Length: 314
Image (cartoon, rainbow, N blue to C red; front, side, top):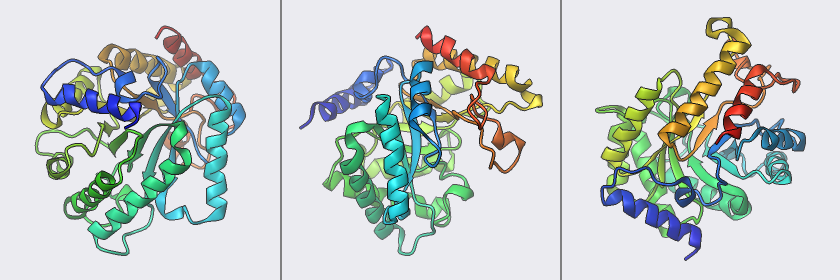
């Protein structure tokens, strides 16, 4: 059994025995250096130059998405491989978020088992570069769970995936499920997690969520809820703030980014990913276009310097 897997089991054992202390990030995610904050990049535009700048800014990893139902396409294979090569050129490990983008063509259990095969295949190809494999992104939103009704299809799909991964385990930590909102009492995500983890308690190393618009107190409460109810740590795989005038423009964005990084450090979140490195000119509206710490052309915004200052103090 690999050392990374042993460390992960030790971390989980501490939680299962009821400790309320935060688990050290290096135990959960051995590929992470001391710093635990990374940033999201777009696979199709991420370059070695971006990676060098991200490393210089103090981020410790990049988050990127991989579409399981596109893996047979040679153009997509090259695009994904080039993105990993760019990260590797700067020594940046990768948080890889895997999901499908097409509706299910079979029943949820069969589809979940097939999805696990895609996860295993991706790990075989990129495992040496991975911080963790995140399974799915915001499945509690209809936009990102196109396979059918979340309340009836998500748990069977993920239970089948967990069973397949149990039979053919990864050595990379697996986290899930990138919820748009953290699980809470009585929420659909909590019901689903109880079903999935009730059958496969070792399927995940951590529960990931996206606390957009939440205060530090609310994030702290979410962390406590996750640990007490699922005996796993919570991690933040996506958070950002757009540089809209209503948020104070670029300077307001910088202030909020700095405050958020300070908060997650104080809360000892084991892993956090900021959304995102560059503005997205193809976004659906001004909000979606302006989350970047840089402009789309690569010019630094005040938020980049603000993040760097916070990360330098970590």
